[in-house]
Length: 127
Image (cartoon, rainbow, N blue to C red; front, side):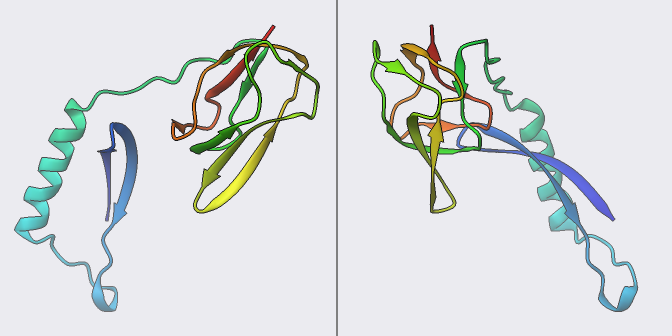
């Protein structure tokens, strides 16, 4: 049996599916403590705020994956060419460099080192 839950970690909501694993192929009942805990998790998740990520607009450079911003390699006013390194994101102990897909002048830096970013989250805006 599978149950779907929404949990919030550090203010970010996540949907998870939990599957019951039975011994020898025979289904077992959920212990009362699990039922109470799952009801509490479901109730808390129902009240958790959802954080909508801002939609990227033309000229926005976005994160290719979710993670923590390790470094920003550009400054406001700097001209960026296609392929220039603009940021470094760490996810699961691996650092990923982010390269500009467009060219232009940096008008806004939307994140700073230490910030968490979702995949598709805006890093910088180019004009």
